[in-house]
Image 1: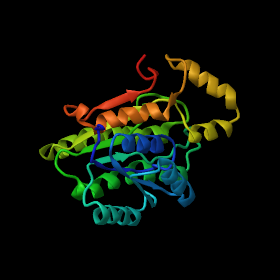
Image 2 (image 1 turned 90 degrees about the vertical axis):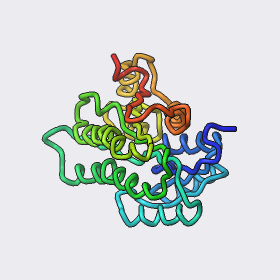
Image 3 (image 1 turned 120 degrees about the vertical axis):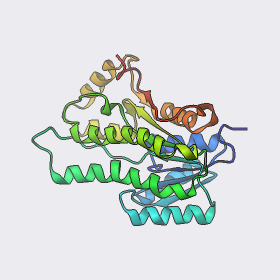
Length: 249
């Protein structure tokens, strides 16, 4: 039997990168997974790639109407949720002095508002003893330049893991954050390719990691499986860094 045998899980932003890798790992461990994504074509491709025990629901986590539609479908089709991986997020960068209201709203609406209401609206479907995992980031612990708004959203996510642990303790619902370091995903590749420094910056980042390389989406997925499973039965409110050591030294 897999570590998540018989579990019903939701992964927001499950149509690519860390979310897709985690969905595959969840299914391999015996779970049935609902994944969300904003782009219908990518979502359909992800469902096809996962292959079994998966339902794709198109929607934007920053839209409360989309979230209501998502949870109504989960309730109708499965009746409950055992695991929530609130993964959907965006990264945009601007140095202080160049931050626009549009940039601020676009990041906070998805990374903070969307994550908060994903979890809150999931609560009626969660049995006692369920597991919630929030996708944070090492940027909440580091002072990278031009990252102030993005880093602030991830600091909020880290804080949610603490406060929701106490809010939900009577229901024995565990809430933890996973904090990836620099992970080799299509989104990161696009971001670096669009920057002036390109491959040079990629090498510089990799060299700053004690393990000397970027992480993989699969390595994050394995950490999320651990936090979702009974292997982590006495772990709540914590932040699990999966970062090759970059935020630790």
